[in-house]
Length: 308
Image: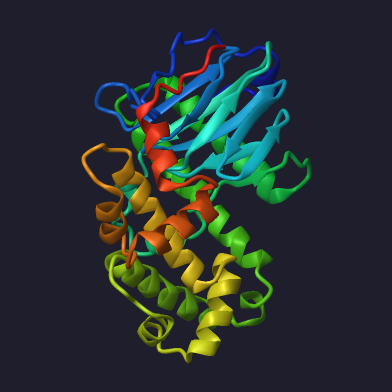
C-alpha cells in the first residue's frame, strides 16, 4: 500500500465521484457487487443536513473539514478521524482547498456477529478521535484506515473481504479502547469483564428486540441478572448514558427512519417507535434532535443539497 506520508502529500487523482443528496437522504452509490465506497475528496462543496444508511468515516489528509452532527460541531484538522453512525443527520462544510479520505460502508453485514450488540451503544453517536502522534490507539485507527485505502485501490476479487477484516479490527479497537477508558470494568478480572460484556450483549439484544414495547429498567436488569441499582451504574459506565436515555435514543432513531417517509402521520410514528403518545414523543424528539418531528418532516421533504 502507499506510504501514509505520500498519501498525505501527494494524494491520487480524484475519482470524480459526487455525492447526490435528494430530499434530505443520500442514496449511497456503492460500486457494483460491493458494500464499501471510498474516495479521496477534494471538492469544495457543502451539504446541508442529510442522512444515509451507511456508516461514514472522514479523515482530512490536508486542510480542514467541518461536520455538524446532531447538536455537535466537529471542526476537523488534518489527521482527525470522525465516525458518523448510520442514520445520523449531519451536514458537511468543505474549505476551498483540502483533501480528505471518506469511507462509507454497510454495517448490517456485521450484525449477525455474536457480540455485535455490544458495539451498538458506541456507534449510536458520532465518534471523534483527534490526531495524536505516539498515541497507540489513534495510530492504530489511522493505520487501519490507510490499510483500507490501500486494499480498496487494489480492487481485486478479495479486496472487500480484506477491507471488512480491517473494519472489524477498527471496531474492535474502539470497543477495547472504551473498556480501557472505563472507570469500572478495568478493576475486574479479565474473566469478570468477559462475563459482564456477555451480559450486556444480551441486554442490547433485548432492547433492540423490544424497544417499541413499554420495557422498564427492572426488566432489562433482570435480563442481565443484576439488581436495578447495580445494572444502572454499570450501564451508565459502559454506554456513557442511562438506560432510559439510551432506550429513548433507540426509539428516536426508529422515528427518524419513519419520518423520512411521507406515508406516516406523527401519531403513527410515535406509536410505532415505542412512545405512548405525541406529547412525550415531541418532547423527546426536540430534546435529542433540536427540532420537532413536524420540522424534521419538513426538512426531509425539502431539497437540502447546498451549493459549494
